[in-house]
Image 1: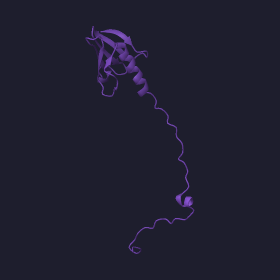
Image 2 (image 1 turned 45 degrees about the horizontal axis):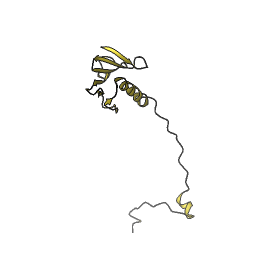
Image 3 (image 1 turned 90 degrees about the vertical axis):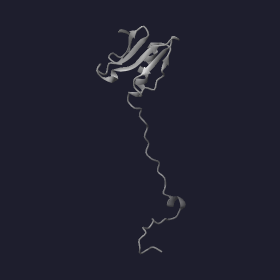
Image 4 (image 1 turned 180 degrees about the horizontal axis):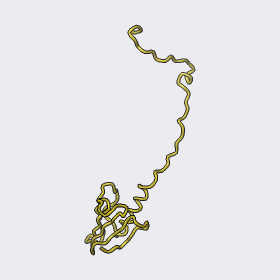
Length: 120
């Protein structure tokens, strides 16, 4: 195998050339014996494009690219967005509203529980 491109973060993702038309992407966060170690297989088509077979169903990325390096960059970008800290959602207390009785200017009795003695 010939290492062609490595991701900018050491020990993370690597694009390794197997032969003239085939590459694999490895995730060094997992040991070589772990199935998650190999993330994708990349093949050069007859048209000069690159077809990717993602080995995880969780990767929502395209299966065709113009060059093999773009596959690694796209995967690294996607992982940066999905595997980081979640985005904080602003929290505001609920709006206070006046009770309906106060809005209508009248008193409303609480509903009575229906018992055998007060049924009509």
